[in-house]
Length: 88
Image 1 (cartoon, rainbow, N blue to C red):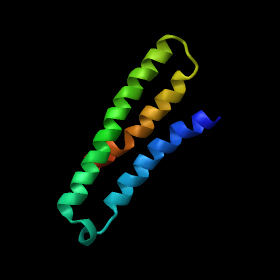
Image 2 (cartoon, helix red, strand yellow; image 1 turned 90 degrees about the vertical axis):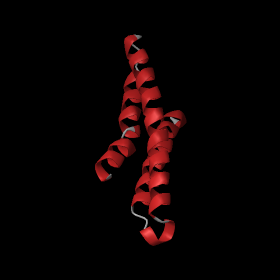
Image 3 (spheres, rainbow, N blue to C red; image 1 turned 45 degrees about the vertical axis):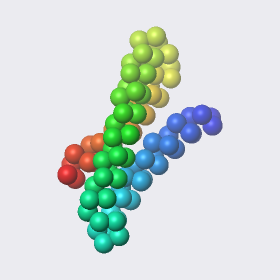
């Protein structure tokens, strides 16, 4: 149970950091810094989504029941990337 909980806490932290950065006033960080931080968070999340997508496909082909869990994680990690494309 602890492993399953940790798998969803870390990506959720990435999403929270992304949206906390997006809703930070411009006077606090500046426009350039906010954009750079958002790009870094979305890039890390996108790379992790690609890796978990590959793991999910591999587990699904091997008929491993944890493949569905990795697929959910892939969708969760792709949220900051989609939000960056939408907000930019």
